[in-house]
Length: 277
Image 1 (cartoon, one colour):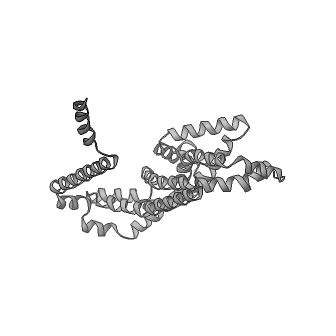
Image 2 (cartoon, rainbow, N blue to C red; image 1 turned 45 degrees about the vertical axis):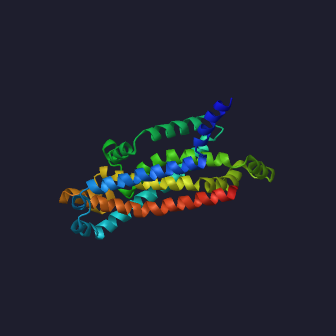
Image 3 (tube, rainbow, N blue to C red; image 1 turned 90 degrees about the vertical axis):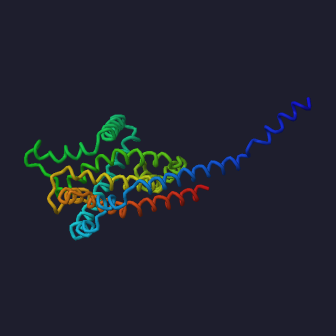
């Protein structure tokens, strides 16, 4: 009996506590990270990387009024498509929650279709509207084409987010509004939608970040120089100088737009977590 106990005791002593095990795992993870950094530093040719991706002379040539115009166009394309998508997405969300079955069917078919079709195909299709319907043109072209094409794709995603926000509003508040004599439309407008949008503001801001990056698909349209967005502008210069530096500069411009938005999302999510505690 004593021999068996003496054999089990050392085994129990060798077991690590959860804290020590977690510390050992962290040390291994940091070690792997340091090893990868060292290997990368020893194998990467810094001069070649700079020559291909960040040539100083091409950086200076890229920075100019044309880059500023492309930056502004990217913001205009994104803002217009977002407004269109938010408005139409709200309508789709209300249709999905409607008691009229055909409305629900139409909204469901729409969202499933445009969530499944790549945005680049939608852009190409809308750019050819003038061929299919001679004389047809969107107002403020090419901005109108981009706003509608990207907006209807974005609306399909936003509608699901907005619908979830509407359903998250406590039903007791809707019943209280009805008891005060509000019509269903008025209670939806004054009570439900303001709270729903407060709930879904962080995910909608994430949609705005994704839409900013999707605006790079506008390069498939036959644009004049005045309508170039960042990707189209960077691609043209990259082809001209046979170097990818202009595209890298354009990529940094996207970061200037998206990083403040992602920071804003984190702040809003943190406030919501505090409010729900």
